[in-house]
Image (cartoon, rainbow, N blue to C red; front, side, top):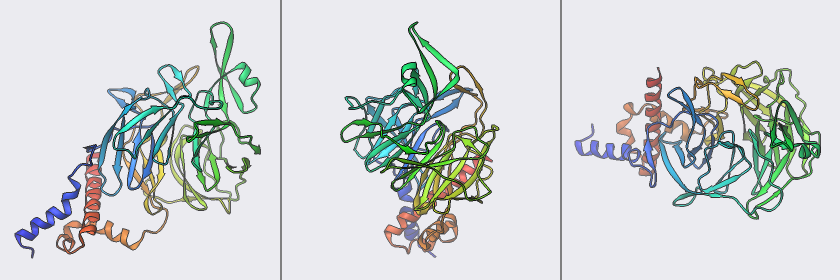
Length: 423
């Protein structure tokens, strides 16, 4: 048995590191539930920015001057403030993370659709927004629900929904007019709403916009699709009113589009507001979304880019349908899903989808295991789950390993508390 001094040493070594907040942040027990946000992983931290939530029966958009961090090892949330040229609250914007910088482009603010870009350095001591101005080249037209690939220090945007003037539409082969929506400006000309399949590239070093001349079999104009990239190839899928999902690939070197013909009879249903994540050199992971019949989905699929085959996978989150969530590749090939909504009630007006304030937003983090874990990961998780049985033995571990184990204890303890609170 341990002596009193040894018990105190064990408590300090095993639990001490989970009580001390990160410098420059405020530790919080839970992040507000949200959808329509953006997230990414840097090291063992999941960053979450923006989105909307339901509060007092009303749907509100979350502040632009804060960012949440989730420690994937300890399961602890913390909140950081962002100063500088803070963006207006935005919905349906597109975020991308490149070399320590978070870039926000497009979206919709209180004045309507926008094509403004903001960035913030998340590797600095203090976070400060900067509005990107004095750019070179033609900035894309205002848009929402578009996507972005990050490749060779460039941001490559695809698709979206927005408006253009009649002249712009007449000069474009990449725009499909939404015939139910149109608007006048003054009495001189019209703006037409619709979807595009444009590709625009932004190079942060030179602040230059260009529109590469793509070739091949172009995808149909769309928004609310999902995208990811593997090496020099960018993939998109969904975003259309189709019974079964489609998938396209753009070579980011030759700018050649290819429509991928499925080689299996079993295919995912067509959907929007889903996610697509690269999990290996030749595999993509699709999760959730909203089906064409209005059902919120919880199915998970893997797509082999070599064999061009879809395979539905079994997973532990079948009871957690999600749409408008976020996804990122985590440790050991895990797919990290955060937030989103379990329900989606909506009506249509002349320009936009109006979401019901009764929408059920989420704040949980879902992990999808896509490959076998290492022995060290299995041991750490086993100790974290069963600490009451191995308290004495933990003291025998090296100090560095004790710190790792303490985070896993915190992680599984927090998960147990959250499950209990939700039951």
